[in-house]
Image (cartoon, rainbow, N blue to C red; front, side, top):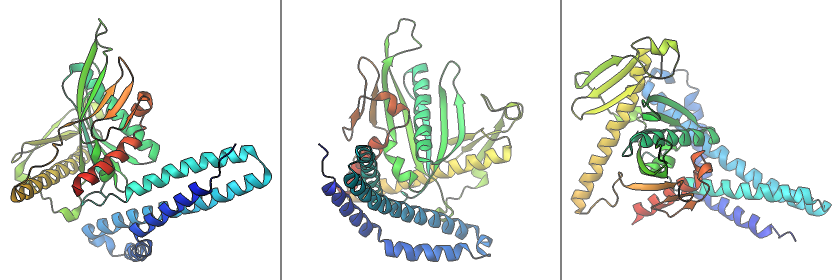
Length: 369
């Protein structure tokens, strides 16, 4: 016997109303109108810094409004779908309505999580760097598995992803990868992925088929904007050019187009090799360097605030955050939130929203403690 969806629809309506109050939609509409007016100014791009701020804010505000309005419209539609299915005693239409209600519940919960992203840099694009840790060739292969996982996640959501650099390892996997996720609140969404990831499996590279534990680090930083005033003095960097390695086409591999930049005062090293042009690779590498310097400054400020308070930072960003066990059983478990699933294949294919959203709630709780 089909259950009455009325209570579920009322609960979702109440959640949407609560989200509407948090987002302050009337204020957002006024902001959107003002931003659209500024964006239409033909002289806007004479000031590059202001233009970037306006277009970025316009994109975020419009995305949030469209997302909310779409959910409100779908909720109205699903209520009507149930009414029609009941009137016509149509079991097929009823099943379709149940499926849409479940999907709508998931999407509204996701938007509710989004309202928790109120950190200083949460609205930014995210810069993600993946690096193998202990475990030899298995860790390099694991790093490539994580890269694919995040790229598939971005693809599932329709997010733009720009890969700055991938260094392939000799036997298998990668030595490192750096990419940018271009979407509103990408940094706030992915910041909980920052940390050490651990894989346990039968090694495909061990001829005795022994179980192997390997590690990889995921580093997530906010992308620098013009307003951050992260300035890099030319005398503080060393730029090396070299021939790109790995796939990318003849034009990439036969010219010294890859760029490695070393920031001498801090020792930070970044590289980019995925563009044909040395100029393009240098520009991309400077984006990565700027994000690294911004994160370094942010961590120094947090450390100073903690010193003044006389406290201790609650959690090291280098701590292990998640286990991926493929043998002797199948389980992915987050060590902070206890969210887990036995569907390891789906997770490694990019279905990580449950982990991502739980981490957002957990990080919000850490801020409030």
